[in-house]
Length: 345
Image 1 (spheres, rainbow, N blue to C red):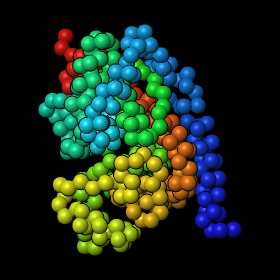
Image 2: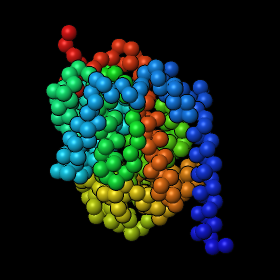
Image 3: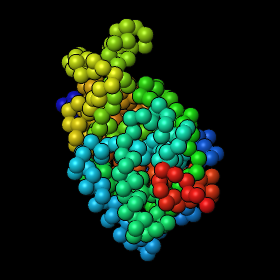
Image 4: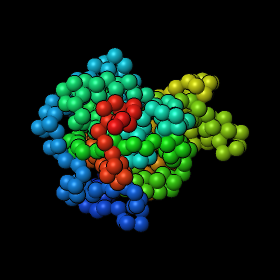
């Protein structure tokens, strides 16, 4: 049998088994955070206490239409915003759960952290919120808006559509120091797995959500250590493809420059990201390591052959990500009138 065909068949078989195992099981309690509540997607009734697919059907029936039209308008003017919305949503959800704490704009907030300095799209959320307040005042949370914007931006980048349950409350607390937990791109696979598990996400979610790097850019600062001084050796990362290394050295002379996360098809939501890993063209260390670790390589390899499977599972994993709730924010949260500030009573 042809070696590539054999590899494809084995990888497809492995990922099929992984999908079956992950989709019918929830994360062990050992990895659950006491402050987070993450429902298992195999039992959607678990969402009913906090999230609902029909929440705004009567109170704001054109909510999704308003958001989609606004996102489409902004992305048409600046296509680079699409991946920025995904990143903004991710940064929000992994810190305090999906409570729009990343949007609060005050001294010492998450938004002021060094980990947040390259985040974009805040003005779009403000624009959408203002429009929604005209049609449905004091009804829709900023957290629900941000979640929907991330989905619609993905669709506009030729990615998948998924149905979103609503009911997230806007948190009142946002601390810059807490934003420092977001992975920086230089962690080990074990670190990443443990981080995702602490949020109720599994290995499959890690590899699938990393596939969001099929679009978007990052700063050269995040990769320069791989180009010039990998692990203190004063040499480049030996795992980097030589031609890709030369390209990155030309592109990233300055830390402030930006570089595409997917060097082949940076503007298309596809499986090229996983193909790049096979060629040692993963931009971030955390990207390339997914293909060098026995726990994640079979999933990454399997997804590279299955575009439809990747897109479908991306939607599933995004629902899990967007369903991470901080219990304090849910109990004591609010519906902000302005996403930048807590309400004044």
